[in-house]
Length: 145
Image (cartoon, rainbow, N blue to C red; front, side):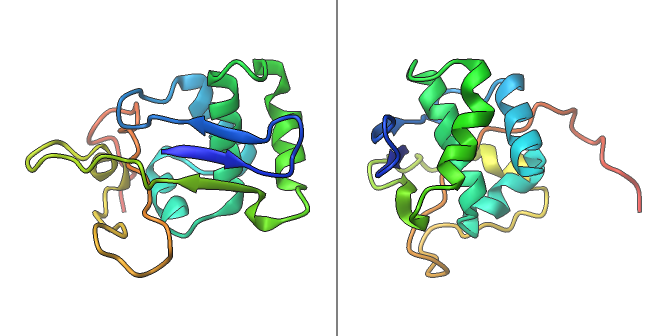
């Protein structure tokens, strides 16, 4: 997946964000939590619904990984991205994502717990949600009902 930034200088460009091949770090999960209030188990739902704040936090993660910003810049760059004049200034492009082989583990499945996602062939929105790495928590440590 690529993050595409348009009209927010000096960060205009296309930045790769390989969530299938490289897991999010604890720091990156913290940015997601602090900046968007999403918990790891809820990110798939937010991406499925194309939440623009979640897309913007993935953009700052991609910018940081590309060496365009430093860790201390993340909150202020996030604020600049969410204040962009156009909703489409920051987007996710998943057209180049390779499909998983049959039987290959789906990292999103372990982080959503309810098993619902847009899946292949969904027409719920115009983008295919990227596959997220599994959360770093311990399996079975859910809250009780």
